[in-house]
Image 1: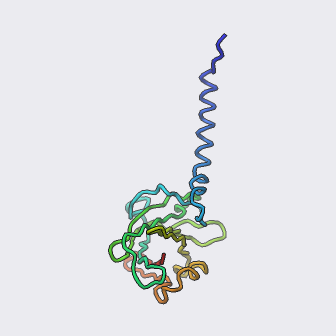
Image 2 (image 1 turned 45 degrees about the horizontal axis):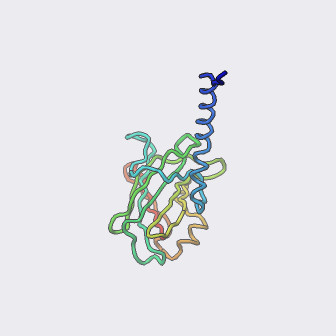
Image 3 (image 1 turned 90 degrees about the vertical axis):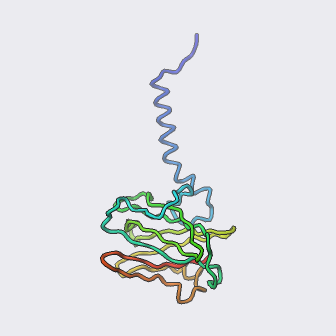
Length: 182
C-alpha cells in the first residue's frame, strides 16, 4: 500500500514552514553581519534616495552630510551609505536604503520622520563602508533637534567642529547635516 500525504496536510506543513521562515528572516540577516550593533539592518536594501512612504509626506526630513576618512581630513568619494529606521506609526524597519557618496564625499536622502522605540528617542541608523572599512552609527532625533550618542562622539571626534549635526528649517522643510568618518 502506498503511503501518500493528503493535500491538506501538505498545505498545512508548507504554511508553517513559510511562516517560520518569515519570522526568522530578520534574525538571520542580522546574524550574517556580526558587527551590527543595531536592530533592523537589511543588507538587501534598495539603492534609492527617497525613503518616504508617499510623495507628499507631511513630516519628511532631508538628511545630508559628508563622509570623511578616519582622521577627518579628507572626504571619501564612492563610499556606500546604508540607512534604516522604524517606519512611522510602526514597529517595523521598512524605511531603508543604500546610496553612494559623490566625488566630494557627500550623501543626501529624504525620509519620513521615524517612529521611536519605547523609552527612546527616534533614531536613524547608518552603516558606512568603503575599501574594507566599515562603521555603524546612529543619529538621534528629539524635540530639541538632532543629537549624537557618546559612542558616535568617541568614534568620530577627529571631525572637530564638523562632528555635531546641524538642523535648519526652511518653508516647513527640515534638513539635518550629519557628517561621519570611516
